[in-house]
Image 1 (spheres, rainbow, N blue to C red):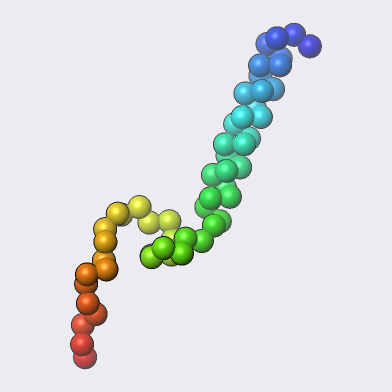
Image 2: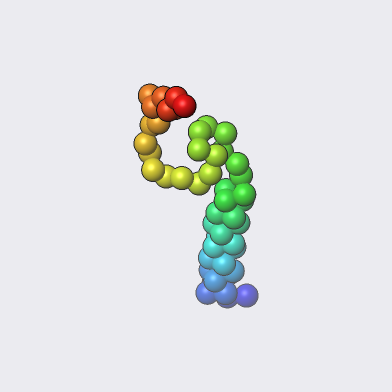
Length: 52
């Protein structure tokens, strides 16, 4: 095997690891608030629910 083939295989392996981590992160459930994949960054802790 020449250097170019080894480099292509190495790049492919790194890409597989990257995509695999993205997939695993998308299946993990966050337990810190909104429970999803929200990226809004808004803190709703000071908002009180409306009384009926």
